[in-house]
Image (cartoon, rainbow, N blue to C red; front, side, top):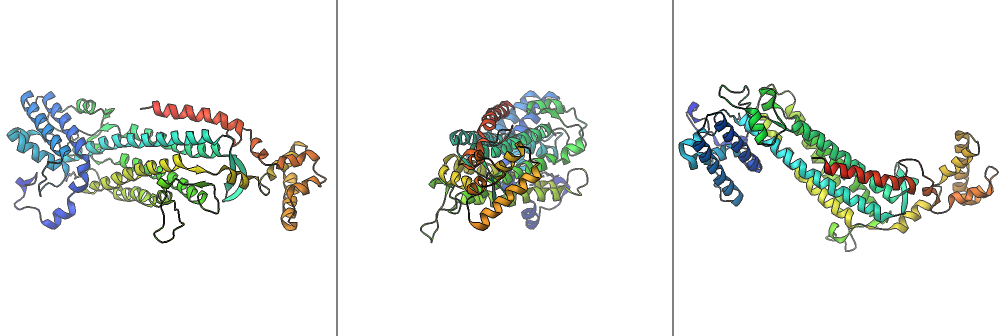
Length: 457
Ligand code: ARG
């Protein structure tokens, strides 16, 4: 039997039911639905709409429902359209006539908005924990990297040598920004819609401030129509999750490159790689590839919801039921991704010798030669041209740049020392730069920022 049978003469057509049912996915909200119902019952007692005995009977029934759902013994009915319907139906079976009072002053519209905000709040906190763990892993890798350096790339061309620690911290800062975005999103979603009713509030003595505080929300809604129709928080969460996915994707792409024979910068641990069903020699970076590939659905989830919301008139519309699957999927995928990629990073075997060999070759310290001339008074554009000319001759004639520098009228003898292995990276000394001095300072600042993010609740 539906919750609205009085108005209808017949039951729901099977095709209609199959199309509109949300129970298969909104079961995930059961804990939040029970929490919301408990707060609502307490609110009804508080407002004198239920006696304390009736309130206790409903809370007891909700406890039984909780045990059944947790224990997997809850029996769903064919007519249970969503988790809210299922819980109310079962409470009514357990508490008899008092059960019929559970939904007093409440609509599924404020109920589902409340449940989803609670769920999002709790789950974004878990995503935050995963991000912080990843930041700890990156810190450990940066610390262990010591003085190891590798080529820094622009346009995937070797550009300038950078400390490996600097490279790891670069990813760390992007993940810390994601933590910051999560916090920001959680501030705006921390609003209780309970008490908004179907869309207009109630004639009954409800106290939305009271139930908001029972549920641990920072505040109650300001406008009942906005409360039941606002899904900005889902869109914002999906954006933050897509952004995390994009960061993971970029890191994944890098692992794919680094672990290739062409780069040879690292070997993935066996636990975070897979083999080929045909080619015996293969070791593939599948988790890294999926971090890249799954970003498509994270962006799709965000885009899909934005399109769902676009053009919806106030207030609740059934379209809004489409908010849950993308959100559940994005949270799930991002958490799995952070854990798998975190593991891959934690266990990665670094080939420092190959990295440094790649960073010492060719003309990667060309800018140091140009800056050498700048310090001696040559205008930079001129210095650039002089060094570029040497680089071109070195490539054309197949001669070492060092030799050309040694024989150049523009340079004194000491200039060739700039091209010795490992020298260039030590010369990046400016704040936030890639050399040992600024990176040591950066390590302290990153640790401080990470600690502050951990303290923030
Ligand atoms: N399953 C619905 C949803 O997720 C619950 C709200 C239904 N409200 C309604 N008026 N039909 O949005």
